[in-house]
Amino acid sequence: MTYKVEELNNISIVHLNGEIDMDVADKARQTILPLIESGKSVQVNLSKVDYMDSSGISVLIEGKQLAEKKSTKFELIEVSKPVEKVLSMARKFL
Amino acid sequence: MSEIAHQDHIEKKAFLVNSSSLKDVRVFCREVFEKLHIQEDLKDELVLAIAEAAQNIVKHAFKNSASPTELMVVQISCENNKLQIAFYDRGTPVDPKKVKHREIDNVKPGGLGTFFIQEIMDAVEFKDGKKPWINHLVLTKQL
Image (cartoon, rainbow over all chains, first blue to last red; front, side, top):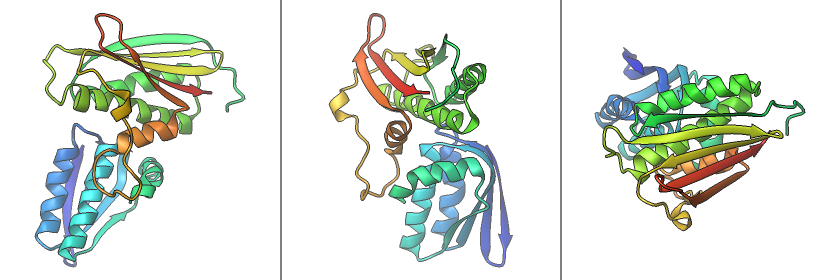
């Protein structure tokens, strides 16, 4: 997995790229959560993520919950088809 | 259920028990499912279920601390359009009664893997592992 963080109009956009599994979930977590922790609005662009498992979904749940706690915005944008499929299965929990 | 008659097939491969192997597990599964001509959508779901089960071995049976040479085996077989995926490992014995996904109103990270496996597969069965194995998990799906 690779990533890029872009700052645009006071929003941090995290572009994730590749496969998000247990092996790299911590890297995604350490990229996304500190941005939310600092009070920024965060968008996660998932257009180039071609695989995501429960570890990746967990990072997104943590992001959503932390954003609620910090009263900031946390959004998923340009969700790829493979991720959308996994999210639709997980939606009962989201 | 698929209307395609899938060829009978059996293939297995051993992987090191660590999180870096999960990608290799997925590659192996995709290669086998290509040979079986399993349709793309189902293939993605099956790969996810298998990767989640392998992840559970790394995370729970070995609690992320397997020795560097420890192996787990994944075997994929198809017979009469019934797909069976078997996992063998030598981790902590799994108590099937304790393996369940969390409740739907319990929103917290983690524990989704078992839910995905149960959603995707027709059956999930823990069998007694025969030596040298301790755990033997079998996932089945009618194609």
